[in-house]
Length: 316
Image 1 (cartoon, rainbow, N blue to C red):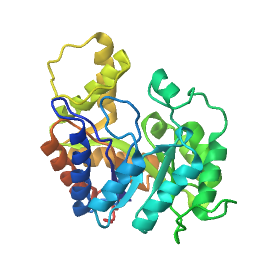
Image 2: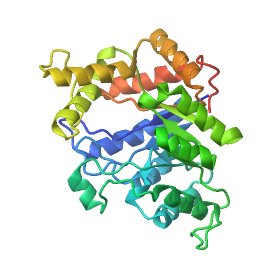
Image 3: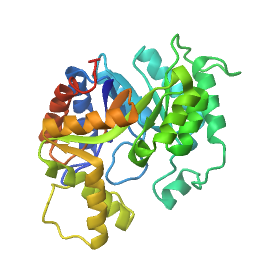
């Protein structure tokens, strides 16, 4: 089992949004030093709390700032882009950083209706995703009628960010899959994916994990509650256990906290062992964030140490 990080370039109150990108690069460098296997970035358009709108550009910066760690996208939302353009971006990255680039792709539309209009997307599932995915893979492995330049010797691995329906799409194509949230408790869906993918099955489990004061998780869970009630995902704020909330916000915070693995090393190790046993994960992709950057860095370091004892973790 491998340990990887997904950093969403979260903005923080009181800082310019550009600082979030510098923090992402610094975190990638630390992750490489700690032995993490992958470092992935995200795609979110016009979201106040996230500075990462262009994964290939940020991937290029991360790869240039590091030397060994694999760099990828969690993910590039394929409905927002032409497959040929995505393939050209990934091929260029792979040519500059051979053997280090991953392509995590998803199908999530824009966050709000105005963003979807700006992306020329209505957010509907028009049934084109599977075809677009196949087209992208053909460009990357050199079997398409159009040859992507620069030509690369080693195809870029494609991972599918999936929910229930996406698991079947990935399984039928023998693709590695990234899953998180409620689907982790859907044993039948995970088993169906493995049956469809056969020996090519590879399950990356995404989880929010923080080692330290459990209250650190309140920064992110509060932001999620605000997003659900206002429709706008805000920058991170310092955790405030005494914050006044509506009943709905309290329920949303409690649900998010229940999905977060937070606490000391023993607590986190126990919960991650249970998660790996329940899902059969091949890799953990940690998505933690909090307002306190020093606490986040300490959590990443402590987690790398803990995972050396969780279900046979092998350092990269």
